[in-house]
Length: 500
Image 1: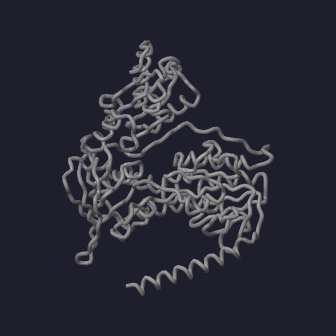
Image 2: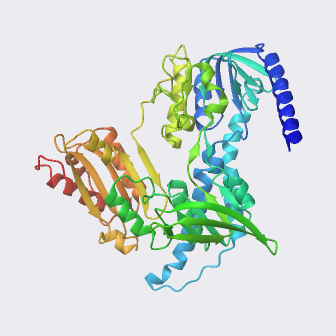
Image 3: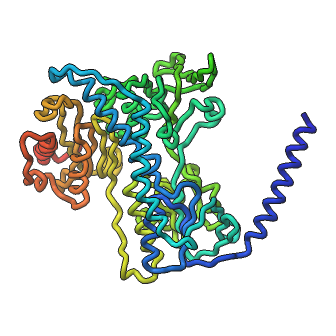
């Protein structure tokens, strides 16, 4: 045992020496540029396009696919899977309307369409990248050395400005990958499945976990959704969270407030079976067994391994950069910008897009052809059914700032159009300032929440009042009449000079 350890240590030391020699050779600068962008996802591509308007002395470095997370492993393939699930659900629930129908689901065909259409969307991004000059693109894993220069492949690049847009990757709890083997999938690998699994455990009830758990359930997969806390969809409004759990538990098996203690995988008759040992919300010890485990416990950036500390960037214990300007992504007074999912601010595509655009603008000496996009107000949508959405300030944030507020409420249980369509489950809360009548934020689980949320996002962005919103027309019969009911409820409370 001792000899083996010594051999490993010796190999490690030799490897370290070889790496040091290589690094020493690479520290001799091979190229000097005005702007270097690391990462070619949504934020990186926008930064490159914007900065390229002002300088040709630019390079973009990327490790892996040159398309975006959204198109390749995120928004688009997940919505393709959800679209298939909605069709299946419509058939299965048709008897509510007196229509007798059955759905036969071809799992291979479902996944083939997801992959084919996914590739269609990624092709647009790929064609754009293909149109960039080859000498401005470098494929490889970048590392920032102690001189503050970027080492990648056989180059060492000195840059006046560095924009870091390296995105994020799925977080997998320690030891799970080894213990679960091929039975483990993530949001980066789930869309590569050739067929639908027979059974699936989804760990994590955030946006990714909820969307995929419901989609697979509707496609006939036996799904169990685990979450370590009693909240889903990132909801911070207790009443809305309770309503969301009530709505979604009608068709999904939810194991909330559960702690997974051990994971394992075994093979019997050539078939792999995953096992999760967990404690339920009562503390009882239980076990789940099935074909696959989808880990949806969030995503993490990789800034610590990139070497950003060599640029003077300080990271906190959650790998988030400190002294971050949330508008441009600039770190203090450094010529360093961290944008998109890499900065762990708001990991949403439209936020990454705006941050990349703004960072690309900020490094331009002449901004005659570019402009700075203002920061977006918070807007988040989970595409389960009913949808979950949050806009503007969250309720705990309003309370922490001691703002006088009222809550306009509406239930969709008896809302006319919702009942007609048999989607009458949900609730909307609108937070309004009791002094100014302006909309502060909103939280909802509701049919058509994506449209309600966009209207309220416009209201918050332009500091509109409840009165101004109620002066707009609401056509009958629409689900948006539920929004009017909540606005009227908020307006009725404006005479109450205290917190609700």
